[in-house]
Image 1 (cartoon, rainbow, N blue to C red):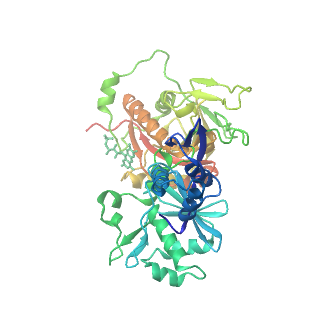
Image 2: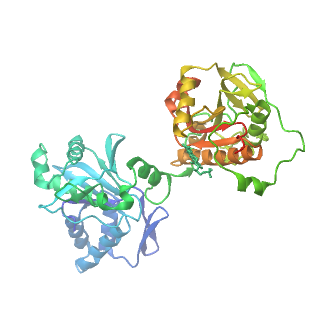
Image 3: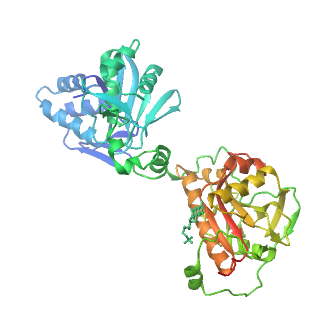
Length: 474
Ligand SMILES: Cc1cc2nc3c(=O)[nH]c(=O)nc-3n(C[C@H](O)[C@H](O)[C@H](O)COP(=O)(O)O)c2cc1C
């Protein structure tokens, strides 16, 4: 069993005693209970929880403590650990650790068999290399493990696997690395899996799979990392910056630009039947003859994004933050999305770029029409195949740190969900007001940052919506 690999318990696994029993726990997901353990099993488990060792040495050491023990029972104990994803596998050469494979979930079943000398292997297009501390991390959303490379030469070998390689061919390219080490690296990469055997045309199984062919690498990686199931990174409301960084305010501080108060709907005013609005909602791309009015714009923003309630932070509780309630739902009541309006035609409002202030229900003047703001309109027209500019392009921009201060692994995914929530609210309110809305799938975030003067990383555009006045009657 894994003669060349150094076995030890996964970083997250702990060895606990329970009466005469041994109990190994790994997080909440995976547990191995070994009942009635004798000295050999105890020795094996304790060594695995400590420095670890090669399988043969571990067995020899354990059997020395209890000569009558059956070797098979120790072997099955190792197998049981492996099948629960509780073992990590180190690749050593000349006494140095070169790489470590760490299962992340019990979805990691077992190491792949030894490499086939006749086979060619190639890197999956879903695999990715990144830096983690001083290690190079190789992972792949097709699997449930990560591989830490502690030696840059191995990272170079991973790079060579962009083209099909046999174990021997790769060993020829590997300066100072034993062929056994290269074969061991290939085996660990196969186990992730980040490489696969390929055919004569260099095609991998993923190239023949209709479902995988239609995933882009960045989408699958984002999906796997922002959901539970394929990794062991913290996910959810972890507040990881609570002691380190102040939380962004619930409401973006006002800028210096002139403010234009927006009309509000009359108190008690009613609209069309809700279900009739739901039934009538459509994407309307063609602006009609009548421009949008300031009152319509004010009413739309009032029913979508204004602050209904402002809840201040509790200074006694560092995790408690200022929040707002608005007509749209928002995870954690964060409401990290800012609305920017590039106005080309609106009765009662000068064409310009504005920001909506949801607290005072006012527009804040940002800039006169510019090459960049014209670009935002042009991008929208192209995306929606519009021949005439919409009256307003509403750009949704996320103050990202407002979310990532609290949420880990899923902050950006939640932001995109909020975009969907806001889109639908805009659609319904615009329909109720008899206006022409159309959501837009992709905009230009650098152009937005240049137009508004925000930092790309602080506040970045994540969605757009074209809005015009009433459609012309058919
Ligand atoms: C998230 C999202 C993105 C969209 N992106 C675009 C787009 O970029 N261009 C466009 O013309 N329509 C876009 N639309 C509108 C859809 O094309 C439209 O909803 C769909 O054709 C169904 O038509 P309906 O909205 O009238 O029911 C988008 C809609 C949504 C919800």
